[in-house]
Length: 259
Ligand SMILES: Nc1ncnc2c1ncn2[C@@H]1O[C@H](COP(=O)(O)OP(=O)(O)OP(=O)(O)O)[C@@H](O)[C@H]1O
Ligand SMILES: [Mg+2]
Image 1 (cartoon, protein in one colour):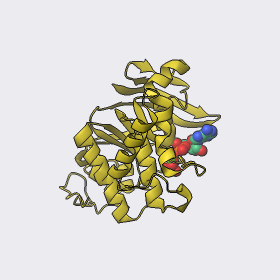
Image 2 (cartoon, rainbow, N blue to C red):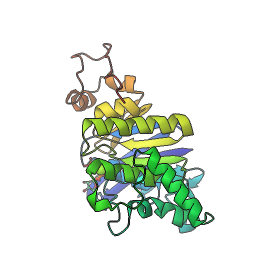
Image 3 (cartoon, rainbow, N blue to C red):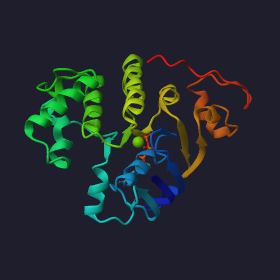
């Protein structure tokens, strides 16, 4: 179970999260949307204990990350794969070494050969077969993103956190990343928590969507619930990206999934 309970976080006078409660459904994909600077990345960092709340609970598999010890947090992080927004690749390491990094730290029982096999397998999964010895600095943006994705899933995590997996990618590459997320959810039962500005992508991958605004979760539900929301702020946010009817409650045809 992964659940936020009345999460509050301020930086000085700036109230970022003002009492957010949200349960993430295991085996499903939940997207968090909202304007820039609204606290999406901050929320995600709480889930793995990279930030501690001012108050509230962050329950991850029975551990409250708000008060967990380093040791308890480490045990929880083993079950997570993470692709952070600023989560750059280490340019001094090869692609393969970057992807291998979580295995070296969290899966010490694996031999070097087993790690290498797993890295090759996951590079193939993200469409980068044979990229082990490539240098991150010479890859395209989409390829770098895929390497980050490979690093996030290499340890076979139960939960994957993706902060803006599609930002800066062209529509075709975005589509293939969306397709990969859907495939991994179906095939491996992975729980995805995805932050995105890309509404079309969100509608492609998410089972549930929460919109964060002004420190609150102003909307939460399925994609259908979202596009039918009668909340002005939600509609305003969506209308920039998806052709919505003027009035709430009308049937909206979701953009076709073209992965
Ligand atoms: N470590 C920090 N110290 C001080 N302020 C911070 C810190 N981290 C985030 N903030 C502030 O918290 C607010 C929310 O930041 P956050 O990165 O979560 O936004 P976001 O919703 O992810 O935005 P974007 O869509 O642009 O990525 C911002 O005003 C940011 O400046
Ligand atoms: Mg962010």
